[in-house]
Length: 507
Image (cartoon, rainbow, N blue to C red):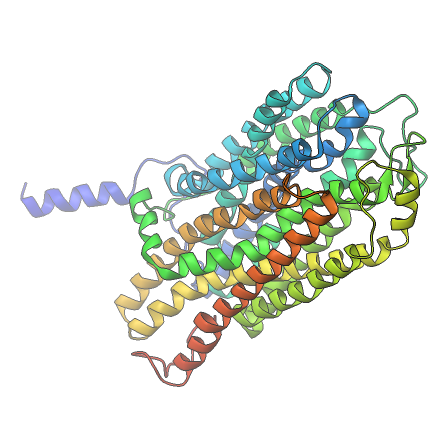
C-alpha cells in the first residue's frame, strides 16, 4: 500500500470515529436547508435541556446568597463580614471553574459533560444539608461547602460553549440569551423559593411561614432530586457534536486577542454586577431595613419578599438584550445598558445617603429607613434590568467580533472564508468561557466590597463601594465606544480588505 493510500485511510478513520448514537457527525447550522430539515429541531431540543441543567446550576451556585441571611436566625453566630464572605466564595470558585468547563465540551461532548456537571451538583447539596442541620458546624466548614456550590457556576461556561456550536450566527444572540437567561433565572428562583421551602416566609396566602422554626435542609433535598432529573434528561435527550472539537491549546490561543481582555472588563461590569448584586441583595435589605423581633417576620422590610426581584428582572431582560443586539448591534446596546447602570447606581447612592446606619439592628432605625425602601428597590431593579440587557448584548458581541475579523480578511465565498468561519466559531466558544469566567469574578468582589471591615459601618461601606463601581462602569463605557462603536463605524466606511461587503457582521 502506498504512503498516500495509508494517509488517506488514516484520515478517513479520523473523520469517522466510532460513536454512540448520541453523537452527531454532520452538523451544518449555517446551511438553510439543513437547518430547516431537522437541524433547528435538534438545536432547540438541546437548548431546552441545557437551560434546565444550567438553571439548577445557578440555583445551587447562589443557594448561600439567601441562606446566609437565615443562618443567624437558626442559631449560627456569624458576623456580617463572615456572611458576606460566605456568599462571595461560590462566585470565586464558579469563576475559576469556568475555564476548565469551557475546555470540557470539545473534549468530552456537550451532552456527556452536561450529564457529569448535573450529577456533580449532588455534592454541594448533600454538604449543605449536613451543615445546616448541625448547630456545631464551624464557619470554615461552611466555607468549604459554599466553595463546592461553585460547581454550579462552572455549568454556565460549558452550557454556553455547547449551545454556541448548535446555532447559526443569525440566531446565536437569541439562543445564547435564552440559555443564559434560563440560568440567571435560577438565582431569582432560589431566592424566591428557598424562604418558602424552609418555612421562613409565606406565599400569597397559600403557604404560611412556619411557626416551628426554619428548616434549611429542605431546600437541599428538593434540589438534589432535581439534579437527578437533569442528569437523566441530559443522558436521554441531549446530543454531542462531533465537529465541536478543539484542543485546550487551540482554545487558549484566543487569549492573544485583545478582544478577550476588553470584553472581559466589559462583562465584569454587566454580568459581574448582576451576580454581585444578586448575591448581596438579601443581606443589604436585612442589614438596613429589618430587625428580627418580633418573630417570625420581625420589624421593617423582610428580605425574603423582595430579594429575588432583582435577579428575576435581570434574567428576564437578558434575552431582550440578545434579541436587540441581533438587530441594532451588540456594542450599541451594551453601551446603553452600561450608561443606565451608571445613572441608577448613582440613584441608589443618593437613596442610601438618606438612611441611618443600623449596626445594632434597632427597631426605631429600621422604621425610619423603611420609608426609603421603595426608592432603594426601584433603583436597584432598574440596575438589574440594565445588567440583564448588557449581559445579553455583550455575549452576542463575542461571536460577532471573531466572525467580523474573518470577513475583513477573506473573500466572500472563498474556501478561506468557509474555513475561517468554522475557526471563528471555535474561537468564540473558547472566548465565551474565558470571558464568562472573568465576568463571574464580580460576584466575588462586590459582596467583599460591601463588607469592607475597615469602614465604620455596613452602610458607609456600601455607599463607598457603589461610587467605586460607577468609576469602573464609566471605564467600560469608554472601552465599548473606543474599540467597538467607533472602529465598527470605520470598517463600515471602507477600512479593511473587504469592508465594502454589505454582509459584514455587525458588532
